[in-house]
Length: 96
Image (tube, rainbow, N blue to C red):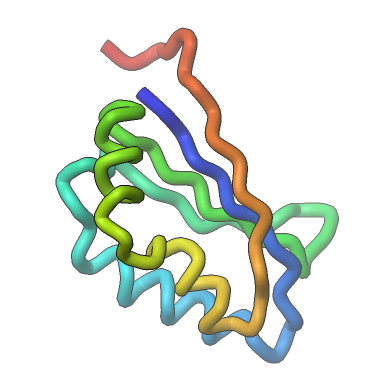
């Protein structure tokens, strides 16, 4: 399992754009995605993240190899933001 995290600063006037783009994108998630979350930093209200849990590194790499622009990037761009991206390997989990 792999988790990707996209993080960006979003101007207050563009938060509704971010939320709408996220809602639209999650309506058609590829089967490679287990779950996804849009979050806001409790202490820095303009800092947003999208956490995405992938079935495997291979699933993530396969989608990347397709050449399609990542949905998470498009979501933040719809709100006028450019995210930083990190990939985390899950070493242990409380899920079965």
